[in-house]
Image 1: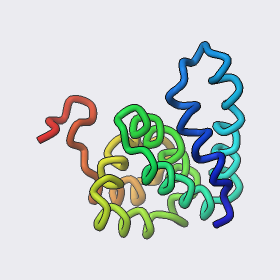
Image 2 (image 1 turned 135 degrees about the vertical axis):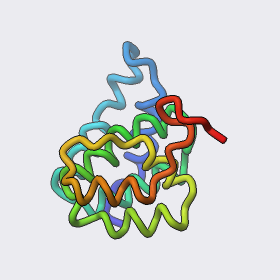
Image 3 (image 1 turned 60 degrees about the vertical axis):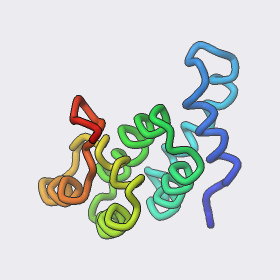
Image 4 (image 1 turned 90 degrees about the horizontal axis):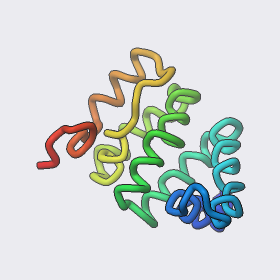
Length: 130
């Protein structure tokens, strides 16, 4: 595992902190860490995202993780990660739900169609949760 496990906890705490708090400012390096992983190390970013989801799948974390790191990873490295994304969504309902919060961003039409084929949109943007 090449990502920093401490940064997973720091990223979760950062997302749950008040944006105007000293705690948020102190933990913001975890946001930049995740961004750098997505940009430079897509395999490690993929593992980071899965670990965040494993540790905390609350609504506030799902919202930020889907529209942030996961969406950015797919927009930047969709061709590299889409097979893993599809496989994970098929076996992990929490991941399929996380995927439901992703927007197209800069994904190719092919990648976007593949995302939509395996996502679970229940509970996102007014889609009924049941």
